[in-house]
Length: 399
Image (cartoon, rainbow, N blue to C red; front, side, top):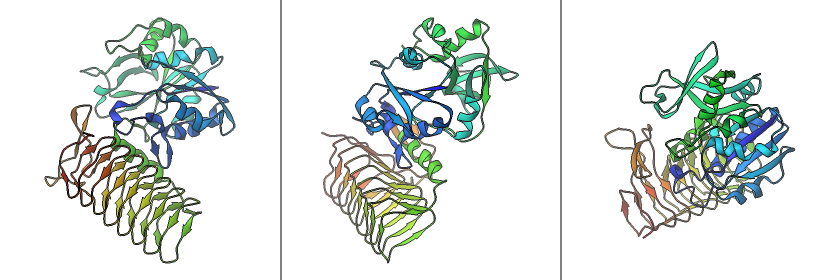
């Protein structure tokens, strides 16, 4: 079996974290989302076909010609015109049954195994509380009877998870697919053509953890899932008066200085330098070559590569991009005083994160002045600067 993994998009809802970085390359649990996908799929396939587009070279250079010894072929989707269009780019390389998956989802080995074991065209479905933002699937005796994209009045609560098992016949139905109202070629329309042609489509029902990682706070949720399974592994330099409790990974080349207190699950990646006297807790990943200074607290956060958090700072429930520099005394608020879920602006609209605690999203190469205060839910754009003592209550971009 082959696997087509779609990793072509920028992911504008992830902005500013996807400025110059394809969404599938955003990290969860210390490595790119798409790498987790390839890891879970690898036991079931003998070849990957990875569909690339935005900043394609970052993906091709990271993975090279194979993953875990399984060869990778790359195809390019120059314009992101929908899932069916992305899968269509892989057609010249497909000669057997194949899995088709998005490269920006959190999934489990069980889900992939159930899908790979299907004997017909199949799609993964899951009962969700509000299916209106998904493709909604109707089934009879585990066979799909209809698919409706994002209906106002869903016929069922079964959502399409965007994970499929196809045979090469699907390309005939993709060729029949016309653009939707969104201007995209939807793979669900292709599947509906197959159903109209009396082709069986099996619903693989799933009730475990799954997450479509589309917005910044979902990086934290996915990281929480990944870190729940880690085991302590100390390869780096931990000085004698540091304290590590719970599952903690300190990669080779990382340094944890005296007086640091870490409550796992936490990953300290290669080249990171933490402390002295810092406090790291929650489901936190301190990324490669990150510097966390004296008397800094980092809680349930993701600090991407080459970022620095100066002494006497607090970072809670936040996502900091690459090459960020927090000046000394920068404080992040992560709780609304009215105890309502924190809201974040996404593509011009305020969106409820569903999280009682959420801090900030900080774009790459952003710097804060000393004693900056950042309100809960604030986004700082790429290359943004704050002045010393500034209180940032609303989103701020480079001026």
